[in-house]
Length: 238
Image 1: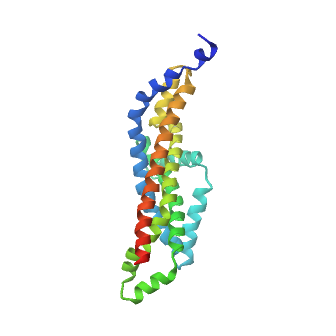
Image 2: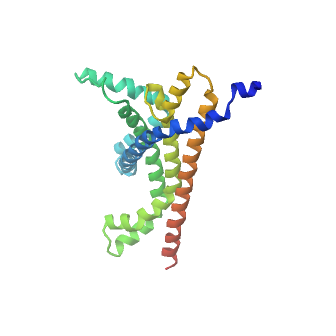
Image 3: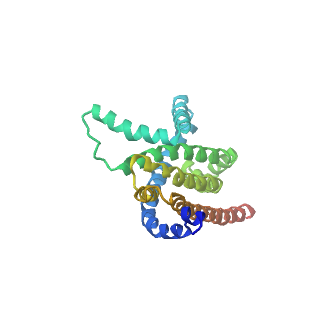
């Protein structure tokens, strides 16, 4: 047996995959909830940013600035240690709350900040004349946004929305630092149980899973963009 074979065993990569994959559903579930809540909160923040009231603008922009300037790991620790401490001051004990709640809260706050900018820039890229024209022909403001503005903004936002989802998956890998057992947490448990032996192979197996996920998401959103862009071009030519 060579020195390379002693310290690096390719078979560990393939043997690690069956042990890691069952925990992928935990990662995907947490990420899905985060994306749903973050998108909704991001939409609310966008409304604040596009409001004509200066105070609402400052609240929306201030939130985004603070969250985007805070490293993910720091935000995770602030939520994990900070929220129970604040709740304790009100006589509420959150020490037995599932760790997943803190993970979802952290990355929802972060994803919302990103999505608020994606949604805002998408809406602002649409010419205001289209809204005015839609209202002038008898559409209500809601109908003008829903039927004219939103479909175009949706297509524009798709690439950045896809990138945001990939970022949630990648940033969520930090969750193991507070004891959350998802696919990354499982990988670290496996390494610990092996007394740090063959850690490289396990991390390579983990990387393969993340590469595959990222490629699938990227291809999916590229396909969506092509489909909706065709519909947009058809609409423009009619």
